[in-house]
Image 1: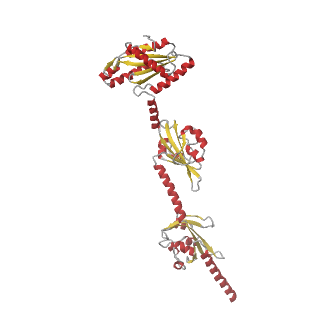
Image 2: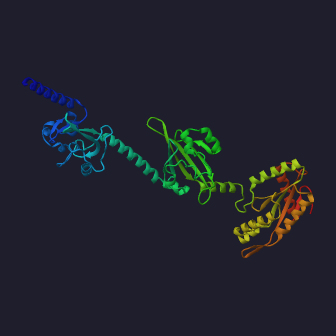
Image 3: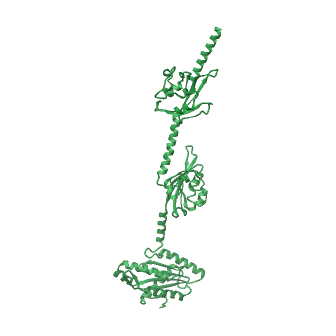
Length: 469
């Protein structure tokens, strides 16, 4: 009997020693309390994590002192009582969840500011310990330091928030898509220019909708998929690689369906890459260049127009003469070129001022346009000199009839504000093919004929090398 009892006590001592060594050797921070809530194990990993030594807690009910400023139950204490929900709610409301590895156990997460290094985020769980008869004899609590993980998550969250704030605060219309072509960011400037609200766009794959009437890739989709061939098809000569960003492209195009009318946009898109170099999305920026395009059109028009009268200028005149010559040659028809110069225009400028002279030229241009067909051309080539191109007139006599009507029209008085001005004009005419067969010769011949008309007394016309009137 005594030997049997001694063997049992030896086994208990060995078991206790064995358990203590196992707990100490485990690299997971843990501690064990008995049925009286006294700490019976507090391993080295737990010492290192909490900064609390075994000697200060073993044999005491002060496990809480490693975590809290004032006395209160830890989760191991609650496990002794069966981890009742009312206790969990009282001490850990919103912080507990069922354990993924232990049945009838709970896992919690909380920040403990009193711990070393400015506090730690811990994930911890506890389970009751039972003897052979099923009686609760204690509880074990394990701890896991997730401070670095939470800091990384917070940094990632902060970075994502910062990106969102940068995109939202940018005055440049910008949107971002992810690797699945879903919109992740659609800033306020984008809403303003496109008329599509962020709440409608974010999370969708409908970034095409504000731009096109039917589904098709936008530039961000194309750079994400690196489909350069399709880019060339969709944007043709409007496309070019970005000189600033590798893999990025830029283009300009006209979008007729925007709110308030069509707009010209300059847009650029660049791929976004993860740390491993994989494409994870794309960003596209937009710029409204409608005013710039309108200005370019105006400049182009001005480059081809006389700035005072709006008539064709010398450059356009040369194009129109060459075109009319080729058509006349093809159809074997006449072409007439008339050089018109006002008579006594300089005295009007000198006596009444250049403002009146300019107004006279503007009104003269209007009268000349009413005297010709839409297929004909009226150009001002300088001062009071005008050139009229009659495309494929019926006959020489028809040309003379037009010139006579022009002279009669010019002779009618011009009412220019308080001034009533009356002038005449002299016209020289050259014909294709009988006089010349190129635009330079026709202009020269018509100019010479015009001087002959002036010499003959003005207010009349002359044909090249032949006096008609």
